[in-house]
Length: 273
DNA sequence: CTTATTCCCTGATTGC
DNA sequence: TGCAATCAGGGAATAA
Image (cartoon, rainbow, N blue to C red; front, side, top):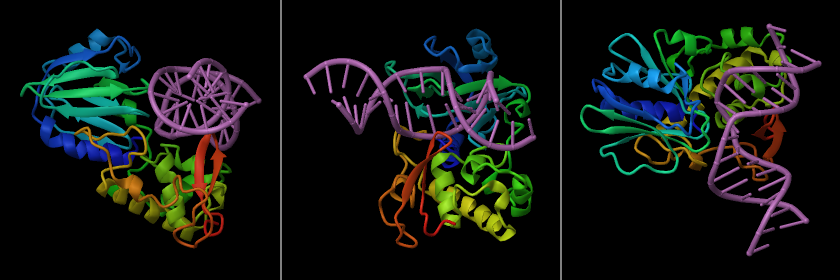
């Protein structure tokens, strides 16, 4: 579902389409009262957006940020099934449409979300939403020394820690498994047992996996669609995720699937130590 | 502080 | 064929 590569793909596609555009119409579905996280009232939320011009499209972890011309920032998190699709025409309302925004060139941003878990904010200071996120893996901010420091003394399984956005921003279930496989480290390892050399390998693996997936436009095993409404291609390039029972692509061992903190976890017990 | 668990959500899939 | 249980997982909230 949308993790860093998916959100980055959407950001790149939306940028030329919405920068310098003004939001002239906004509608939030009453079927999804929790979409507006702040301000929580849909009318107040809409009125903060109307008439505002979008200055740029940014990303922090899995959050999309739209700085506005009055100093506020519109922030979107797609969570599990959210999709933000740019359309030239309005078109008829459809079943899972949860919000719709019209721009001053007549085009639209459609927000679809089957499971209604996504959230949006309009805030004066984006730090109140994204302030606790860890380093950005693709901006050179993620370094092994800092990761090692953050992991010191931690007993939770490494996989669970990688999903904590305060440690590293942007990893979700798919890419946490992929990065640990790429690094040759077991997802079950207590975080604090990582050696400096392993932390270095893990940082490198995280960057490689996330940038590779971004080049493929993200992963569409299920519902993920990019800003053009199209599927990504990285599901054809994953190396462990959902490959349980199949041979490991590095050592030939058998990939195993287990359950870790309620999340499915895939790894190769013979080369991930 | 840390770690583990539950809940939010609903369509698709699986099991009997 | 039908219906119930399970699965998918990002992140907030809660419990211990």
